[in-house]
Image 1 (tube, helix red, strand yellow):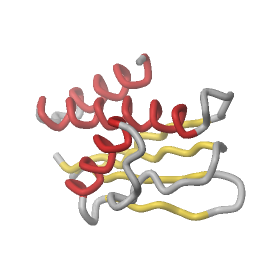
Image 2 (tube, helix red, strand yellow):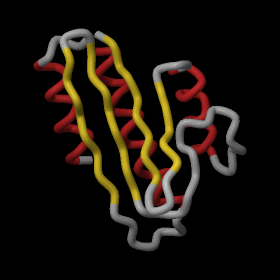
Image 3 (tube, rainbow, N blue to C red):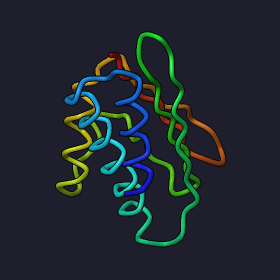
Image 4 (tube, helix red, strand yellow):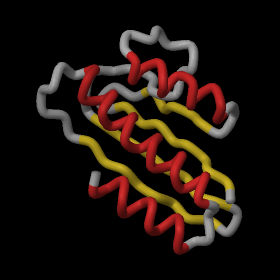
Length: 113
């Protein structure tokens, strides 16, 4: 929750609309809770980077939990949370990508002003 508030505050300072900030906060909350859900509550290291640009922001999330593509809007919805994330990914369209690696999941999401 602290991460969500921090990023929301930064995006507000950068002049993002209230709707955009709220969507970014919801995305962060749901993604990290989905990572926890997918890993059965076991300890997973995760991180979030916020890259600011004049035309918007990129949110990059990495975790060392079980492999799954968070950005896949066609992923099987195994819970209400997975369904919400899937719908959000569909809305993002081309403004998302997932990097397949051997040791961690890395997903990035573009949020325009």
